[in-house]
Image 1 (cartoon, rainbow, N blue to C red):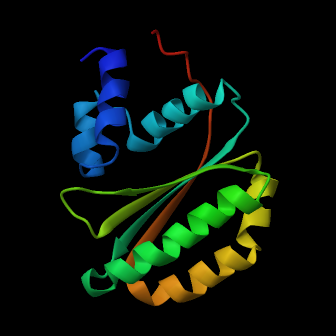
Image 2: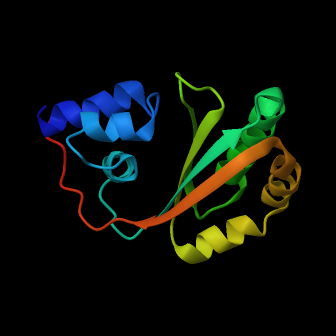
Length: 149
């Protein structure tokens, strides 16, 4: 699969497949690497952004409440925080209880400010009981060549 096809595939499918399957399909490149590349091209090439990818295994009986809470947090983050550039909530089509957040901040300091915001604190306190597992990846862009049109 050519690189442009790989990135197009991620744009079409998001994280609808489990990360291992998606990584295998994308020639061994990681999900987080592909997501960083997608944002790089959307934002116009600034390599100095702080990126956070968070994966949640949400309890089945809590999914509706979790989705409501994260929607409020994501919308408030982009609307109210000057350093929050992007906050996407993705859901695995094969496993709806697997929710992935893709967040882009101007800097690690902007992310720390995000963590102190009332909407973030509300989400964190209420969501804790709704999830089985949470894994976060703090990322920095290192290489992201432009995508050919």
